[in-house]
Amino acid sequence: MAVTESRFVTVDGMRTHYLEAGPVAGPAVVLLHSGEYGSCAEASWSETIPGLADAGYHVFAPDWLGYGKTDKVIDFADPKGRRVRHLAAAVRALGIESAAFVGNSMGGTYLAEDLAGEEPLFPAAVAVLASGGGFIPFNEARSAIQEYDLTEAGMAKLLRTATYSSRLTDDPEFVAWRHKLSLEPGAWQCAASARLRPPATGAAPAPPDHGGEHFGRKDPIAYERFRVPALVIAGAQDPLREPGYADEIAGRLPDAELHVYDECGHLPNLEHPRRFVRDVLSFLERRYRTAE
Image (cartoon, rainbow, N blue to C red; front, top):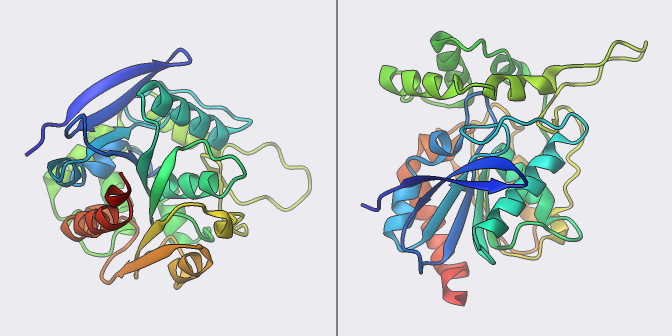
């Protein structure tokens, strides 16, 4: 099994952490993690990296600005834009000129929005969107995740809400590990900062946002403008999205494949890791590696 290394690169004065594995000469794959409390590259991709690296891919999994071991910086005026620009700069600093990009949840949404823009910052040859994009309702499940209180019981509730089965939350070692990751100094403050709202102005309060993702508002992503092949992976029982959202996304993408996992919530890369890796590898072998 390939060894995963923990490394740092300084980008615009900010210390940026990333995981790296696989042969240096292999095709590059960049993994973009989700944005729940305590999330980071290790939390999202610990069961994905070995499979991709062992298949010959050179894998990079960075921590977004404000998450994991990357510097805890929040841009209140443009949190999403700052994160995307910083990560794109980190990719350039690592010498990655073209790569397959795989994003889960927040990572998938950020990736989709960038690739649908006029001048994408990410040098993506292909894209995998796992529970990313689509209308994001502010429902009971979202509210439960937003209320994380930095306790181990709170982490168990967060994971139980986001996932379909109890396999992960029934594992006390996994819950304790995820809880420990959430205690990285400054990480809670960066994630919680999005919940701050200005004083009331008499208008109805707007739905909260999280790192630039606005809940309860129309999905703004112009999927039709994608220039690269995409694989969409979704959980059939995702409590943080509406039923059928992935079918709509795949239908709007010019060149897309779709996998909907039954008995799966919002984290297919963690809930069905073997199937996730198998499906991603199949897509990369057919749509990415053959073009190298």
